Amino acid sequence: MNKIIAFAGKGGVGKTTSLALFLKYIIDNKKAKDILVIDSDPDANVADVIGEEIQFCDTIGGKMKVLKDKIQSLKLAPNIPKNQLIESDVYSCLIEMDDFDLLEMGRSEGEGCYCYINDVLKKVIDTLSKNYDITLLDSPAGLEHFARKTGRDVTDLIIVSDPSKMGIHTLKRILEITDEVNLKFENIWILGNRFPENLRDILLDELKKVNKENVTLLGFISNNDEIAKINLLGGNLLELSEKNSSYVEAKEIFAKII
Image 1 (cartoon, rainbow, N blue to C red):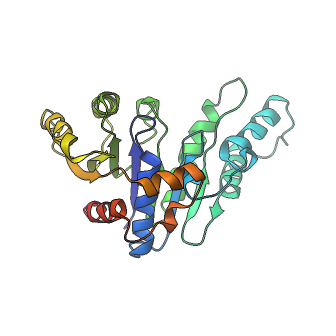
Image 2 (image 1 turned 180 degrees about the horizontal axis):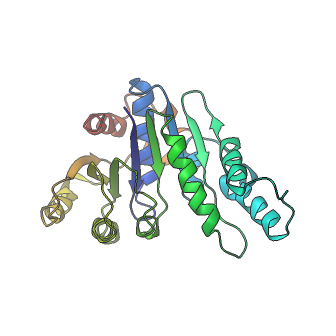
């Protein structure tokens, strides 16, 4: 098994929280031995929801900033290929947790073009993910991530929407862009997060208008005060009670994927 599962959607809909619940489900139920989590959101939100503090210097963005400065100031040894340096920096950024490895992309800093670095970086991460049974990818908010084809090797795309017009609008635009740039996924799942019972039909009606064979409703996760409190206080969602009502919902719907 080698799955790469990406979480996408408008900022604030609960992508990172949903990813953390999925990660907890995989760990608790021993669905995979080797798990990689890649946080490509510049705000490093995955660390926030698992109670970790990651410094910028420990992210790929921080390492690439140092490398970029060395390239521009001609301080690199001429006999060392830049792609080897990038690959080395990526591996040095891997944070080994008890049950999974975490790779924080971080933000880019300073002016100038990162095109070469980004191109090599994609290849390194593609190679790295092949060493894991499951890779979970927290995509940045917005649509640029897909317009640049950076999700080309994702097997399962989970598009998260909250009960808002903006969330559903972004969901539909992501589906449009995946067609426009010819991104192929084995499955595209739609996840309604924080949806009350009386509003779920609205999302269902919108999905009926989507004419894509591999788009499937994954399910709904209700709003939950305990999860909100953990997120607010910087706790660890992986320590959420097994009996938490929203986690019970999450386990049932994530079982559809793995």
